[in-house]
Amino acid sequence: MKQKLIRITTVPISLGGLLQGQSKFMSQFYEVVGISSDKENLEKVGAKEEIRVIPVNLTRKITPIQDFMALIKLYSILKREKPFIVHSHTPKAGTIGMMAARMAGVPNRLHTIAGLPLVEATGLKRILLNAVEKLTYACATKVYPNSVGLQKIVLDNNFTSAKKLKIIGHGSSNGIDTSYFDPSLYSTASKLELRKKLRLADDDYVFVFVGRLVGDKGINELITAFKNILNEYTNVQLLLVGNPEEELDPMLPETEEFITKSDKVIATGWMDDVRPYFAISDCLTFPSYREGFPNVVMQSGAMGLYSIVSNINGCNEIVEEGINGVIIPTKNSKALYTAMKHVLENREKFAENKDMYREIIKKRYERSFIWNELLKEYRKL
Image (cartoon, rainbow, N blue to C red; front, top):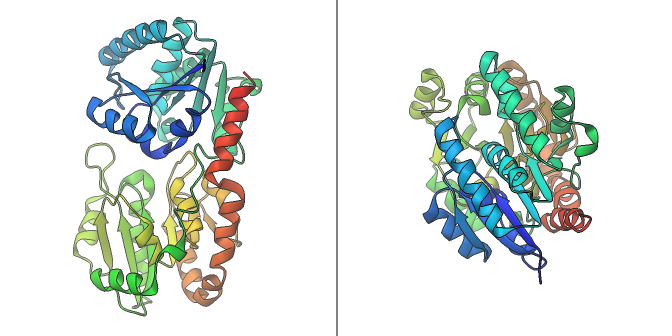
């Protein structure tokens, strides 16, 4: 009989998107159960991953009453299910999941850190988030930061001891399927068609950003830098693939206005499949303030793009300075402008090395490698 593995995320998109295929892979070796909020979407993920799912109402915000209700419900589920392993991902699922698992006496309580929102927080909010983080790790038996940078933040802040921490493989929570993110899947004709549809000229150099269009992804700095680029270059475009989030972290009004009005910026909105947009682009611009281990940077690398990224954990591990990209300071539109200008001036050189950028990602972050490294970790328990 297989041992039971319960995986918990705050929202189903994390279970089915960020960890895509991982639960299905693990179900060859364990009885896997997925727990998350949003019953309808969770059931879709369950069907896709071929696992049993149980909905629990978890929220991404600080909601003490709902959180307490979720804790009680999760505790009763774990007492009933009696799993061998509970593995949580995402901050809220980590806190509630690890507390409930400890209360229920689950022997192996694992939590993956894929980003720390507290990095940008200050004052009382920071104090609260620090306390919550410490509580999460105290309830866990093992904690997996998904990058060297995150591990350093955890240790610098004394959230837990070094012996509880381990990085799986070279980092990343789920790696990347490089047979899916493969530029050879896109013909010259299909790329020309998409460029035409987006009104890109044949000689336009395309910078691409993929992600939420919000302040802490560096969108304001990106637009400022791009405006300066436009003072010097005409045949250049900025492609933005993602949705704004008005509630949590809106862009500056002038940023939004420029995106809406400029014929040099193409905002596509949310796209389920970002590969065609990487395929028609020349360089990734990703000036985020904080990340766990950004899939976007791995994806663009696998699609053969040179990358401009900020000097934050994850980004500065995937990108090697001057080899497959440029690393710039965060919140610095001048440095971003300089990097974009450098790329434009050396466009032929960077275009020649597309195969190398792809090879770096394949070697270090192939999805099956990450899955097997995690399976090794489970089997040690």
